[in-house]
Image 1 (cartoon, one colour):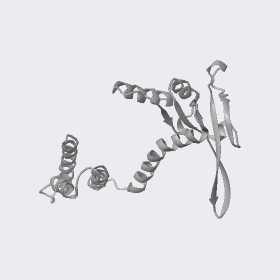
Image 2 (tube, one colour):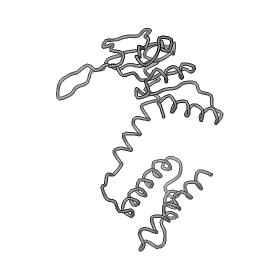
Image 3 (cartoon, one colour):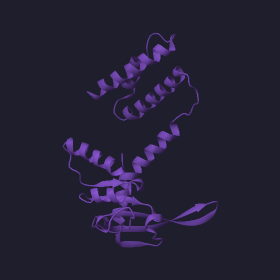
Image 4 (cartoon, helix red, strand yellow):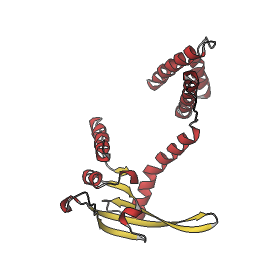
Length: 205
């Protein structure tokens, strides 16, 4: 499945749910001519690898793709914004350039602010998930299931901590724990089933 196929499927799913797409924001991993051609029908902001456009200075203007895999009439013209940030690495200051492609007619600062507003929470959540994920080389089903259940508990906590009170959350945990903990494998499987059913119950509140 290509990147533009992924974007098309996601857009179709959103439209099928009855939502109107006001803005599409994608990271640089989706920067391709095919994706740009598709999302051009919407308002969009997409991250651009600076190495692809080879613009290493502050820039805000029109840009045309020059993909060798596409014909001239398949190239995409868009507004390219390139900005710089100073980063300190090993006690040395280094200038790093970032680029964004968009079709929005907004001031440069507003475009960048809008991109960060949408993407920052997503990037932060990915970092939090990766930081929490345990790594194991164990092939034992019970141990891997235990890790999965612990991750599910953590996810449950992050979801419900701002929705339900402390006592309600304690009641939820009581419902989750099976009576028989001696048979660990069966207990974990039953615990997972109960977890799913309980989450469904709380979501129906």
